[in-house]
Length: 135
Image 1 (cartoon, rainbow, N blue to C red):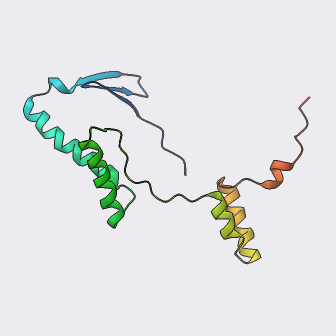
Image 2: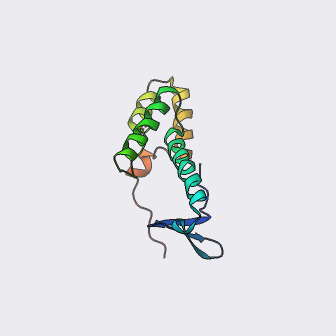
Image 3: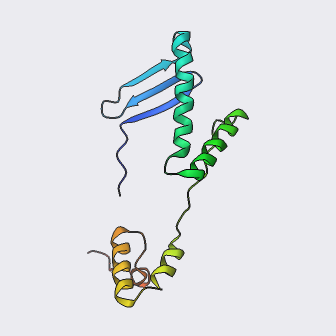
């Protein structure tokens, strides 16, 4: 799965949000501190809701609850960069171990698909001699 191309570049410097629209190159700056106090008061809870919601992305149940709580606890300690609990990762070693348990025809099909997706590398290609240089 390929990533979508970024449409905006964003940076926060102090209370200023800097945004660059990628296609036009237009750069804009917005100072949070200059917003009316009523708007600042509404943006605070909105931003907190968004940050805590991001902590639960891709999670469910207790894992989501724990991740949200971890982020909130970090914010309470002054750590803006705190991250939620990372989801389980699958290693290539674990994938290969699982493939090796399949019947031969299924293992071959699984390997072919994973090679095509670029998830695993062709061991033959790694040991193959380098192609001759073009003349």
